[in-house]
Length: 326
Image 1 (tube, rainbow, N blue to C red):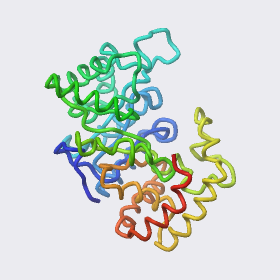
Image 2 (image 1 turned 45 degrees about the vertical axis):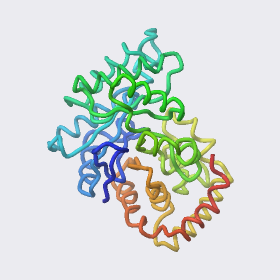
Image 3 (image 1 turned 90 degrees about the vertical axis):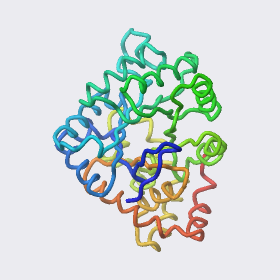
């Protein structure tokens, strides 16, 4: 496993990381999480991603209990969470959902620390932009989390480049803690934001990336070419919104073509897709997901594929996937 700096910070994150979206609590209990975290750490992964909204807070509980059982030294691992959706989506408290106002954020960080059983969270993200809260208010709140020792670095997820730059400029002007990283979706069929929209931010402010969904929610495994398998992510309760994109005929045909490239390299198309995302030098870490050990081990095989991604291989991959990319 190789390690990369998170943007211009001194923090070193593993080029592959392990996330908990969909899986923890829904498909993975504490015992299974403990086992997978141990396998990931043994393989060199040191960054584990989570979010307040995953399984309505229960994903953080599962991960936190697994950390406690593993008894790792706190310096050995990096953990993240994300704020925006809140835990009261069906309730009446307007300041507890879909917001980045100061009241919500200052309480959200305490809730995540309590659920995970940690004194501080390494990385905290604004999970989505909030058009109803001034960016300056959000920047001050996120900076204060760090000043108070409740978080170490902050960043954004799925923010427009202009808003990230605005947040950075506000922090710079007021001598606050600046946003260090962004967490965007990035895979073979979704690449323009990372490769084009954010292009100026890498040099101008040193933006780092921890990207999610390298397998396009499973599409790039090839398992959805004949419909939605009963044990797949697309069949999980509440994930029905994914079905249409997972069964896209043109993209599934492209996956079949990509399998030919993968076969030539001696890997699976999933390993090829993860390695492709990690090949981008702007990506600090690629967040992978797994509901069982076998999936995790298969994903880890992408590390061995990276050196095989020559310019010629990359050109073959782009010829197949780039015309379908957004």
